[in-house]
Picture 1 (cartoon, rainbow, N blue to C red):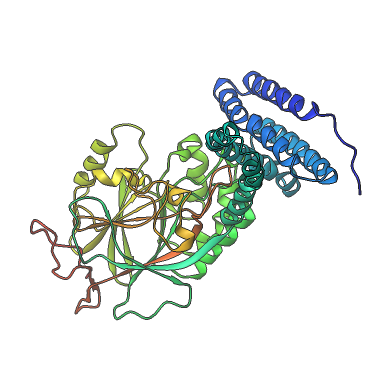
Picture 2 (cartoon, rainbow, N blue to C red; picture 1 turned 90 degrees about the horizontal axis):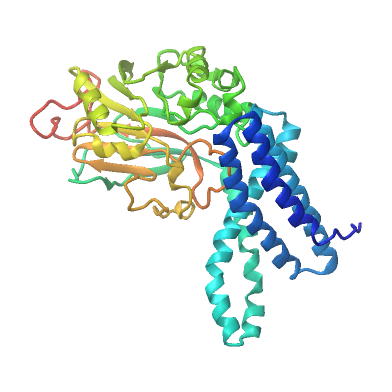
Length: 453
């Protein structure tokens, strides 16, 4: 099948029209903030994507270049329609997601990746051109496909999810600064037995209900969590996107399987949850999930009592708020002490040894890295944000979940989502049938540790 060749100026004209029309429409209907957001996205992505299209067209035969031109035209239109639909955001039917929203967001990601890649190659290409190395330039032309291949791979990574059992203990070294600690990751059903019965926690975080994570998909993932029969289900925030913010009842429907685990489910807010707090509250409450916003609960589990402290997400004064929360709620006798803290950078504010285990999300695992290859390196490694996995500070441990979804753009590169069951292994069994969580049974400073009775 042959397609007619489009006029050369058509795609740039369409891109310019989107740059003007979408922010203008957004400003009139939704307001200044979203108009600026749309303008920045389009301004960063569309010009670079159009430059990439011209470069790729030069590498293809005429028929292939025409198909590429039509494909980019469709992606431009899908991008415009998607951004326009967010002016009155709500969850859309499957046909709209697959024909408009997903292609549109993938195109914006491609444009952003193209901007980075083409900019990085400007200097090497300039040097080769200046020295008359045309043959070398021609030999490197295939590198223009790297942004396309990267986005295709990232879509695969973003849409996939790893089902793991993550196992670690709370005993061991006590680093004086936040440092990575060892853990075990096993495929579900392939994990070896342990001597003492662990505390089994299913953590859900950054579910981001939306075009890439529709109600049916998230509901299926939550049903898997329930089927694993964990002792606790702890949800650490960022449930929604713009689309699900505007769709009453969507979160309640997605979390419905949690109603089968009464008394075991606890949650906190992430930063995005403050955009639609009542929708999140109702979605949790209808399914029996207890929301802890700077509050505390004590849960009974097969290995003893667990004190769960839920920290709300605060933009300002995080250190003062976290420290005050912990001081307000001391450890009850015989309780393991767990803190839910959406942003793992706030773990720096937790006094060493003040809690046994902190659970966080927020970072999406660092988003870009080498985790898929079994290497604990991401773009956030070495930053103030612990990116993913297990960290320690004093006797306290922090587990940063890579997230159960992502927001907006399919840019998980080498960092897959996870659907994990955490197995927190005690150091020993208590004679009365509970668990002892540390070898010495005491925290630094002489306070009694959380040895569950």
